Length: 53
Image (cartoon, rainbow, N blue to C red; front, side, top):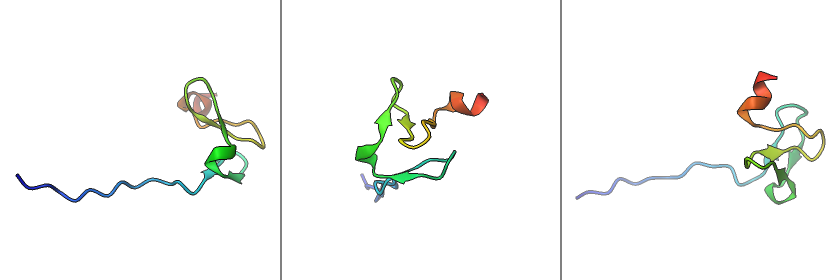
């Protein structure tokens, strides 16, 4: 059995708010009850439901 090299691509550098552009470290960002990041500056969330509003 051959194993394929897998490189996990993710961004541990921080959180960037798509609403206001604020950049913050992931440890300074709170998360809502569903686990989506909440912007510390504007309170915006990255949840799919926020895009429908």
